[in-house]
Length: 218
Ligand code: ADP
Image (cartoon, rainbow, N blue to C red; front, top):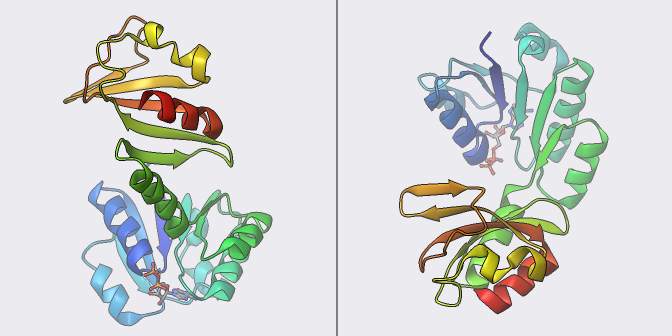
């Protein structure tokens, strides 16, 4: 059976999730308090309804219990976001993803049963900061407080040398998990793979190790 999604709060963030899921042909129930917002999504989502998600009866009537994954994208109203999350948790929703506004909000959300808490402004800020710090860091994804995945552009220090020659794993404790070269992606490259200038390496490791790798080789 096809998975069903619900997006609560159709601001910039929730709206964009709703559009993207719908574009992929997935079933999305779009919910917002605001009539104009809901009208905007009538043609986009499978269903768009005006509702207050802090009202448990309304959520039950909408059949929210049959939804596999609910995304709570209520912006500034932290109280409504928390209450909605608690209700969804009590109704037994299998997967709840919630957008946090700040660190306190994030902490409470995790405690009350959100399966996945996202903090898009903060995370995007970090990614952009890493991109600003080095022209060769193209992207950065935080895996935990001290581990990340980075996308780095190979310069002339690495060019013409193989992974075994660079000895990245032993010297820096990082792993090159893939290499993007033009349109190709070489997943789990062999140790003998020669790096070319302009290759994009996807590197995973502890932040301190990645940072040493960047300083010495990028
Ligand atoms: P963003 O920062 O992603 O643009 P906004 O704060 O602009 O977020 O949007 C949040 C949306 O959530 C608004 O459209 C608002 O009407 C909706 N919303 C707020 N509270 C509720 C609620 N209790 N039930 C349903 N929708 C809500």
